[in-house]
Image (cartoon, rainbow, N blue to C red; front, top):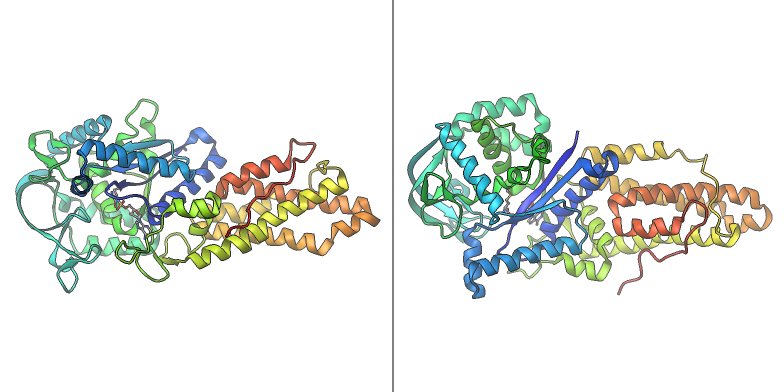
Length: 476
Ligand code: MSP
């Protein structure tokens, strides 16, 4: 079975920060894992930008740019950022692309034909920051949106509504019958409770929106940005080669947008009679040194700044090793720096460097015969099991436990001393250590893709080792 993995598509009213990079890097790690398991052509990894939002109109005005120019500029900035940090996406979708507009309109046309859409009046609150309709009970004590700390807009509009309430029972039964469709369990429990409290119908168009895809039956109304955005996943596979992938769609999202993905999105498919996506995994949020990342606190960190100082591989693992994927957690630059020094430079980098230099010195750089001492398949199992369950931190911790194991063997056996008195025994030790390096290099294709390239060069052509390289240079 092929895999179709997606990240959320990001709003372009701002530049990427490490919260966005976290989700994208996690999905990238899973995509790399599945490519290694199933082959490159069996994995399709989608990301992109969510552009038909009132927020982008406001941001373009602020930047003094025409909207199209602003969108092109910002979308390019997001895509370049993902390129620069080594995201291996297969397609980058923008919701202002023609292919998307077409798919959205035909999806909406189908929805209209089901009879599950009706016209009504929306009277209530709307938060442009979330691009979401709010109930008074969603607000904080000051009547502000708790996420954006701003008052919501009072709206009274003629809108089209989607009869979401008609799918309440079906969704409850779905998650009861097939719980793996929404993970982790904590998020599923939240959604089950939300479903059991009863679903309201939702407004799916906006009368006053300045940007957006027109309703096919009523061009004066723009399709609500979230309905438009969710359809991106469907647009990307509307080609003859990709069509079958739809059945495999798996969405990795942040917990803030679980409801959209696990309630509204499957209901839209149930309504039109199309298969629902395979699953949703909603990860947690992180704070920076205990504080929410925000412009006003001045603690927003750019992934490119971390890349510049520590490199892409450190950026990846520094973020993904801070706390288990799926949980909430904290990220600190202190943790990041310690992780870099101890685990990457001190542990992994040193191991490769020492072993390669020693084999050059005592075996003339000849690659020892394949190891009988370590069973690579056994070593692989806990790593595979962790990634199959999306326990990315567990996989990383296991990887470094193997690094420690190898370093311990090196220190215990002291082959640099042994080689002077008993070269055949030292050669056996090198064989074992070489086996560890091969294993770590293979796992690094998933976790540390740039270092994996260097490792491959160091491990040589099957007969001779390459030159030792510094994997993680000292930083200051
Ligand atoms: N455009 C919508 C998604 C539409 S998907 C059909 C959107 N975009 S967003 O740019 O605001 O945020 C996208 C995602 O960024 C969030 O869901 C979340 O996964 C991630 N994060 C933003 N800040 C984060 C943290 N501080 N921590 C972890 N993830 C964070 O919502």
